[in-house]
Length: 104
Image (tube, rainbow, N blue to C red; front, side, top):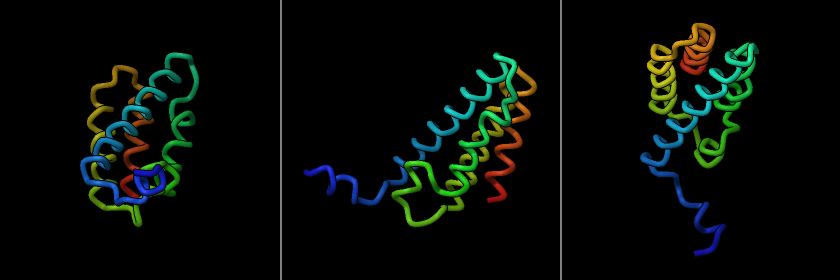
């Protein structure tokens, strides 16, 4: 199968869910690292949140629309992870990101 044919196929729901977990993990890593360095976690994850909300992340480039289920899943995942993050600034940034994604 050629590269072009492989990437023209629709993305499965399982693949979308894996991508959401990876996106949430990336946002958590960026927020916690920024907080540990003394930078603003919300400002550090803002490009990732905007990218998700405007469909510029790799998963959404291959889908035709923002699925309400996927938006809810990412927002819920970030909110649940924020409860487990020991750094208060990073946790607040993740909760704000979850709220912004839920609104989009």
